[in-house]
Structures are given as C-alpha cells and as structure tokens.
Image (cartoon, rainbow, N blue to C red; front, side):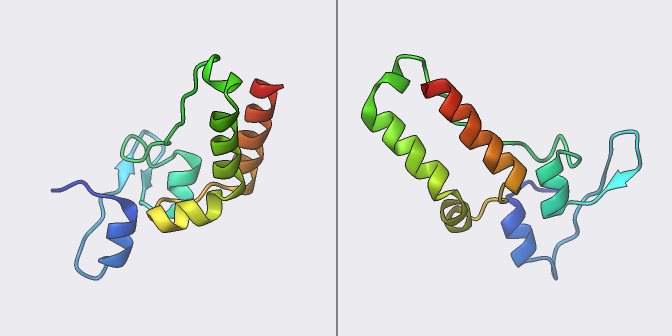
Length: 101
C-alpha cells in the first residue's frame, strides 16, 4: 500500500488499484467529487492558507491572497490539485473579504 496525490492516481489508474473507505455509510471511492465534499476522509484533506491578523494589514500579503483567489483555477491545475467547487471558491473570497474589511 502507498500514499500519493490523487492526480498521480488519475494518471496511473490503469496500473493502480484505489482503496475505498468506509466511514460507516458505505464504501466511498476516491474521485474529484469525494475529495471536494470530504467523504473520502481521512485520505483526502483540504489545503489551507493561514494568515495572522497582522499579516492582513500588509498590502503585499493581501495582494498575494487576492491574486491567489482570482487565479485559483489556473493555480490548482498547474499544481495538479483537486479543484474547489464554485461554492467553495465563493466562500473563500467572501471569507477573505470579511477578514480584510
């Protein structure tokens, strides 16, 4: 058994067997959808950016985070991560706006 990123699995699915997880509600296979909705836990997890209150007062930090939010689809594709849903992206933008307002 080995652990690696979901994208690696997708690229090599013809030679790998994925492990389904049963958290008490039946087996769940790894997929973009189960990673996004959290049902493939604990083998999938969100990736967070943490900022201190003081950091949000620095324009270069807020510029960077705004760039990240505005370009998240391209960044996620380049990094080969599971993309956020539209709802998750909206929540991210709203939460950061509330933090910096």
